[in-house]
Each structure stands twice: as structure tokens, then as C-alpha cells.
Length: 132
Image 1: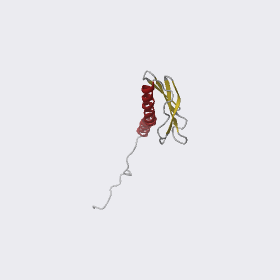
Image 2: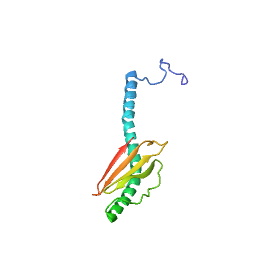
Image 3: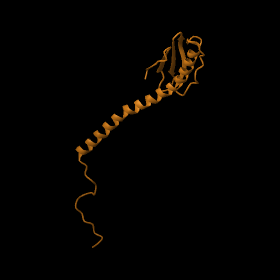
Image 4: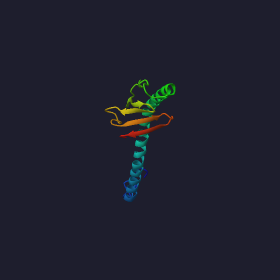
């Protein structure tokens, strides 16, 4: 009468095609695998940018000294304060070439990494990175 249920043998759930489930898992796995390298590339760019900021301050100071004196000899060796991931220092700065370095701090994701800027008397600068 109105309270009776019709029984047809089904449990009321949706049937999932095993092939469709496997295909969906493969698609999701592929998307995740494609996203991981992009994530690490973005992360590397952020660390590199942090090092570049300190090195740019050093480059401007060394270049201003060169423009005043005509040589990198005797330039001030004041460096920017360390950041969360980097410490900064000058390499050899004599005559017409000056090396500026950022080194990855211990116990950080960039431990063992370095970014080196070679500043030349003609105003050009070459940046190299290691250990990323």
C-alpha cells in the first residue's frame, strides 16, 4: 500500500566501469607528474631571485667604485645581510674583474648551491649558478 518498497535486486549504488576508473587514475597521475617539475622550476626561480637581489646590491656598489676609481682594487667589501637561504661575499676583485657570490645556507633547500656574478670593467655581468 504506500509503505511497501519495490525490490528489484539492486543496491541503489552506481556501477563503475573498471576501465573508466583506471583511465581516470592514469589521467590524474599524468597531471600530477606534469605539475611536479613545474613546481620545482618555480621554486628554483624564487630561490635564484632571492640570491639575485643581494648580488644586485653588491654589483651596484662595486660598479660605483669602479666608475670613481677606474679599478675594482680596494673596493668596499660590505655585503648585504644574509637572507633566509643565502649568504653573500666577494671573490677576487682586482683590476677589471670582480666576482660576487651568494652561497646557499646550511640546512636550507639551497645548501651547497651558489650563484656567482662576474662583473667586468666594460659594465657587462655574467651570472652562473651551481648546485640547484
